[in-house]
Length: 168
Image 1 (cartoon, rainbow, N blue to C red):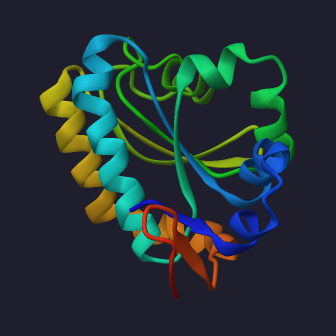
Image 2: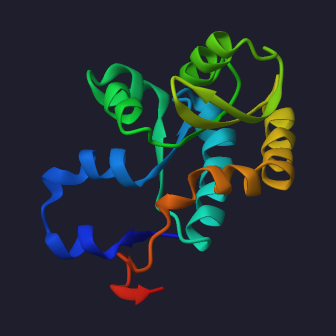
């Protein structure tokens, strides 16, 4: 998947990356403990591959990085950065925060919510198997609606940074 919008690669100004992600990306969030790394992160990369193939710029990040890095969550919320949070409320602190504030079923969910004026996709279950099922349910029943809500974040030109080949 490793596609990056061409303008960020061509500029070479990596100090702009956090602002660029906040304004241009879809952030897919997973937890940081071992189970989340083993089960949820591969699901997040599967979602990222699908979104990338549809012309979006997905970035997979950890819940702790977003929640514990000072202004990071504020910047994402201020920019109305679309988020997809994968993993249970136990495995993913962002899922727990969103589900609690939105009053969503604590055991499992696949759907879209508006949280703090941000479009959020949520997919989680009570265990890794149900989370996998909820991700597939999100992809099969919610993804097109999610894309419709965030369609202004599509990009015309990407560069595969592993091969330096442009794609459209």
